[in-house]
Picture 1 (cartoon, rainbow, N blue to C red):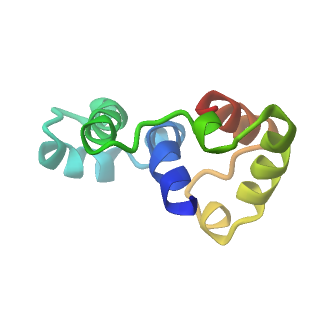
Picture 2 (picture 1 turned 135 degrees about the vertical axis):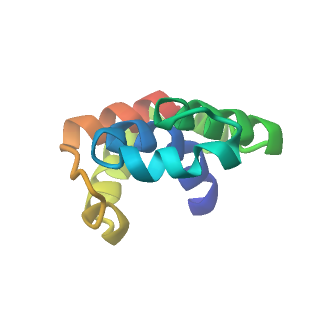
Picture 3 (picture 1 turned 30 degrees about the horizontal axis):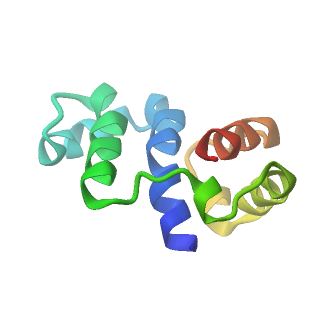
Length: 100
């Protein structure tokens, strides 16, 4: 479930970090069939749909009742703590709720 959640969350996380990772995202854009950094999140979303990981997490048990706990856990995770942009709890909650 953790890997699926990461795959589903990747497009919005890329969008959050785009402003500070423009050059890096532009560098991977061609491999995704995108023409620039601004298209990478959408290209990753399309790839996710193609491989079957673009699924609502509600189908996997994510409910409104646990979304807050998931957001708090994600914010405390070492991966998030090492991200180029440290989001607020409200931003993480918004991403998690959108994934349901």
